[in-house]
Length: 312
Image (cartoon, rainbow, N blue to C red; front, side, top):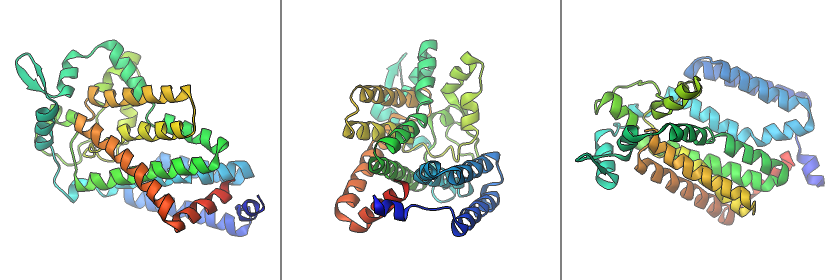
């Protein structure tokens, strides 16, 4: 406990200058790379307010800095579109999906996305929208729960979460892929700088006369990043750590959300089944890599211990 107190970050001249310098650098770099947005200013204000408000809020925001780093990397991907580095897979991915998971309907072989676009139901539209709205709030709420329950498990979960995202980002650049809705609206012709699209989730927005998903997908970094589906990865890591922490019936909720998100990804034409499977594999790979690092790489364990002392 003494070490934790000694290593925790105190408010002094050095820490004030450091935080303000990082904030200014972040805002300037963001404006240069992707243009100024109010989201960036909001993030900067929240971080500074939490850091300077109290010791508890400072530890909380330092712990959640792992997620802030993820968000910044995701945002900066707009400045480096993956289609500038490798060709975008559109027709070949569509044909492979139809070959492996095609559905025979009215005498034609179509993808599962196309089947559900024809055979959707209002109650499924509503349920699907609710499930898809869980993809970020549930992991963040779970992280908050772990922060106050077990700081070490919080760090394990947070680092694994970001590691899975980094795996996904690497694949985005190695294998740029168009989502199913792109084929619906554009065919197999590549159009750079295609804006995000709510696709099947527009039915949820229309039902509630709201622009929830429209506002979310307007902020997307790149529509040619459908493979893997990180939407499908997140609930896997949540359920994994929920089981590790023996959360009982809460894990049933996590399991239902996981299956719902997997289904919605396909139902709403945001991902192929192949994308969902790739997302699941990415989650398993990220969890496995983290466990290997934790078991066999002592500097990694030392980093976690030191980080834990800062936020304990």
